[in-house]
Length: 514
Image (cartoon, rainbow, N blue to C red; front, side):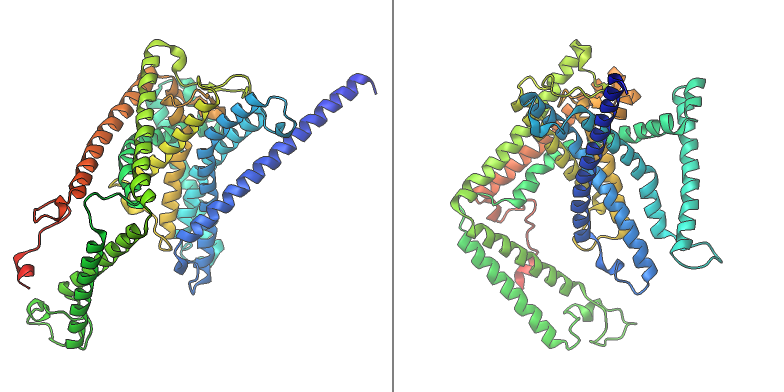
């Protein structure tokens, strides 16, 4: 063999080893995410659905849970995709010839973007609908019962749903772009249909982020206030603890006296007045009056209040007087910085056409920094991306439309887990496009993420940036002023005055006489 042949074989062998190395790294990263997501879903699932008498239902739920774990791992990968790319670029720029980071290159980053795009399509279009229909299926009438019968019914329903979505996308393409070439391109399932459908889903996700993120940025202050110990001026915690314990003991004695007076244990003082004449007056009846329920709710509220007061009483002076103000200052700084960056990006859109988001086919990492402040600016970009993602999730679960979808600890139904995984995947897969559209980073979108047609529309991008800046400023000003007003009222002790302050309703005359 000639020297040229040896050189070709050497190049092919090197490419083969690089591909194998990238596959191993991608597999290890995804396995780590999968394990973390499996542990998370295990703590939220309802144990009764996996320990039922019917082994068939338990098996179906276990399969659906694994599919949800896969989808949630893809969602977490989509969230980490852009920050990982930004940090990798800065590492390669700082250490260009380091032996220990030779595995980190543009080919690996580009492959991760393509894998996330592929798995997002697979989860949204096939796996999650399959998981939902699989949990709701019972098998065809007359067919043999079992898991296999459910699989047959699920596959048929999934095929019908695919045909329906195909028709809707084809009609939408014909309405939006009445061009024969664009309609014929939809016949190519892999190259055009899936990216086009994912573009529509990503656009919906970006719109959802536009609504949820400003709401979440405003809610972050109240959520952080519930997690941290707030400082109190002119407040006697010992007196509040004494009053809370006294009220709890009084209500507990009242409940015990009523339970001793009525042997049924589930009857209250209002039974004789609330029961209709046609109903029996048996004290062992299963009817539960409103007075006893109200007493139980009051006791639970007092217990929760006492636990919070004890937590604040045990907190150190540094935690009580320094932690909360610093946390509020950091939130205000991050929110203000986000709005400032978006405002600057709006001006850049009017001046420079290069500010428009666009795709990049080749990942040329380690050549130039994507921030004007270098590595420090890259760190700020990563922090802002994570902060906006957390804020969007908080705003999503705080909105009245999706509040009922909020998962509960060891009490989340399987269909509710599927809905949460779908929503989180839509939000997370739209995060790279969302961050690049707002100008939070200069890192261009890789792979099929940059093939969305609406990214090149100046009016859509400009209106999106202006709407985000306006909504965030409005929510921040409204919520922050209300929070400051409420804190000042509590700080100066005005909430203890006999005034009808919101959140502290005055007791009725009947209760006062009692």
